[in-house]
Length: 566
Image (cartoon, rainbow, N blue to C red; front, side):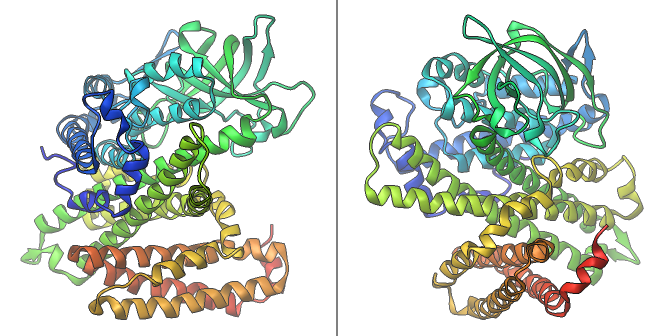
């Protein structure tokens, strides 16, 4: 089997982005760890060599084992035994290999047992794992819950829990309940403080990914008499203390290897993470932003697998005396699939770099005072990360689903059969646009960056970066599309009606996202000629999509809104 990192030069293209030098230097504190840890990098080239070598290990395990196990895991799935989860045999093997290879707690500091990776190469590893087995990425990827402990827990909690994650123990975030799905402020799991300072949790959680994990982050109601988010706090529950049982594992359409559990808390011992009342307002928001970036990576990994499956089949399948890839109807689909994949990946890693930079400055601020310039940069990158995360998750997951749909279509009737991997990939993909905030909720998160001009400012900044003469015609098209987008936003805002703005939000967010991704693919093509075809195909696609949305906004009358209301 192939190495899922080495066989994809696009990953190395994104890892070599110019901003990585700044990110690595900040993460390594100008490589000070080299004086304490003999395996810590001593300069940028050494850091990049480390990232590449670890990603090669990830790629080898994914291509050689995890991908091979995926079909068996999907068929066998996890089960409940005596109130706890027993993983499928392939899942157990996958976890053990990742533990032995030291691929848990990748982004955690070395002093706590981690690899001290920036978020960007960690997200790259998540993409690779997702390509191999989407469901397994949920188990492996939940290690990023340790970031919440690192950011908000006290030092004692960091030293007790994070090394365990780095050694291979699993995590979960227990947020949703039977009566509280996306509306987390309705959470009612009861937390009661004890005289010794610990807490006891009682209630039910539902739809908890990897719900029988070793270490749980739990959102619970700590303040008596409250009914909104101000009465919620975050807690750490240790499975070794007992008190939580798995009532059932959901029977899902896809990602069957990832146990989605209903949990019963009965006087379960837990400890407060951070401060009371900030569970939803601060900690879950940070947790969800990380999770959404992870789902964006998952979406790109699945999209990559779908494109490869479709391409291989189209080259191999013969009809009317020639391979079907030679038919325009098929090669157009494949070109558009590749363009969507390249666009969503470009946005994923641009977002990851923004997240890296603002989080690194936040972390440094805990050690020393930031300079005025550093503080300014932190705020700048924080705003861009906040703006791009819902785009990466929302649009990336939609492209993922579209690519998996087209993968089945290219396979024809064979794609509907379980003989081909695309059937499982198609089922696995569907959840990406639902969990950790539906696409519709990503629009809600993104719309303020339309109305406040964040996206327009970002688009303008990309437009200022010089490109080759060959790519300038694409830039000219994007300039016209930007003007169309700006006119559409102004037209919607001029109505002055919140309900009307909300109704048009998806169209405006998509227009902004499409133009941003188009700029990023053009910039990729400027650095690497292998992206030139995708740049042309994607700009053509975006041109049609922006025109469609702009025409709808222009022709729509506010009075027609009533026709759409329930």
